[in-house]
Amino acid sequence: MRVLVIEDERRLAENVARSLKENASWVVDIALDGVNGLHLAESVAYDLIVLDLMLPKLDGLELLRRYRQLGHKTPVLVLTARYEKQSIVRLLNAGADDYLAKPFDLGEFLARAKALVRRAKGQPTPMLAVGDLEVNTVERTVRRSGRDITLTPMEYRVLEYLAHRPRAVVSKTELLEHLYDYNWEKFSNVIEVYISGLRRKIDDGAPAKLIHTMRGQGYALRVGEGKR
Image (cartoon, rainbow, N blue to C red; front, side, top):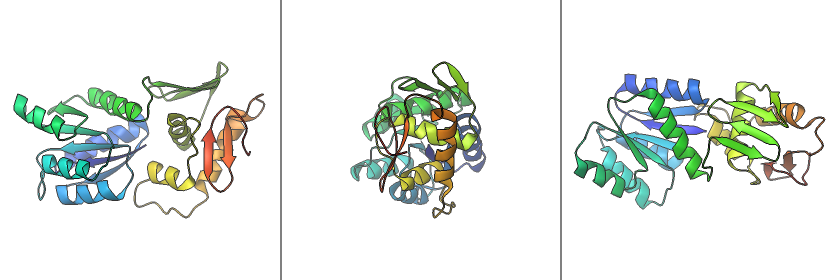
């Protein structure tokens, strides 16, 4: 998953980003002001936006309104120091999906962030299942037919993204955009390498193949026919 943190307090932004990277294995971009934050939000397909309200150049509430007016549906978790009921009502009416009052516990923040991403992708629980494959997004563990499967961090990230979109065909470009930050060189065969590793660990020896290549389109995690 790829997250945009729009927060002008650099230390807080870096702490939030580090927590998401280390505890959720997500990639994070940071914007330190509202103008740059809105530009990135409009330019990149994020899975979650973490938004501070008190921002230089463009405040968070106005950023949120403009973002939603453009039709974007990415979940937005607002960080706010404003406790007044009216302020909370305004930000929810502007299109926020959830909020946390500063200072906040990083454990609660992570739980809320993961829940927003799951709901946005139609997954109500932390356990993602495709056939006899189970992906526990809280513990970041994988099992198939009761057998524990050990994955590298990047193999897990690819699998989790596919598991959030079971049966859907996901292009290589989409995977790159959601699993790497904007500094990544996208003309690479790295996705093919991770897919190959996942096939070896998940599908080899299994009666039903779950990871399929759809020629000219991308990859799908599903029970059924498909190109290997």
